[in-house]
Length: 151
Picture (cartoon, one colour):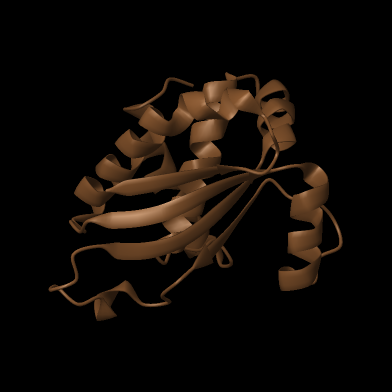
């Protein structure tokens, strides 16, 4: 497994989450029974940067907390022979980590891990556009995260 961290926000505090992200990726692989040599990037950005990304790619003119760009829509097409399977990119708004941790009354670590897990599940094909999809995805987030970081 490989997680590449890109710090576009110039926030040195984000590096502390890499080991948690590796645990979340491993735990997600185990729970979903999707054992590959996964590779993905996590790009930490400012509210202004994620606002531009959200506006350009989703046509939503406001900042958001996390955006994922999957390299493959259907992971069932991944060839077994491939040595590394690239999932895509997760963009995380560093200010949203602070704001949402305070709003929801939990730690910065829990919020940073939640946003990563949420983005990761999107990369693996999960969504929350319909109520049933949301229920499945959000329950899965809790199962994954509760073993890694307390609420």
